[in-house]
Length: 141
Image 1: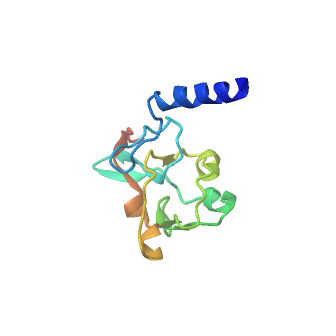
Image 2: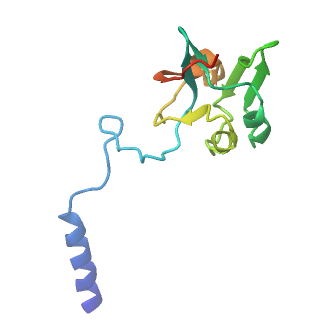
């Protein structure tokens, strides 16, 4: 009989507390500051035009456990000609970000990405560029 009353007490206590469940997609929970979202390329302002901080060294692509990053360097330049991330294969492990010696990659707070086709999940360097996150760098003469 005591066990039944303890169970009833627990049930009534849970019944009158505020629910923890969030009605998604109408309400969204806040993402933690180190939440693991989509990968973005960082930009720097050198002169009049913004450039990628990436120098196309390929360390991120070599260290990626899923091999979802493709990097090709421009001829005689320190800018990527091709920089692609296939988010359908990415496991958001941050290894590419941590291994980049130039601090050229950043992980955003975006976590919602839905599509019916696989082509939507492959992003080029133009799509990966951080808009509004351009750092001012003085030119060295």
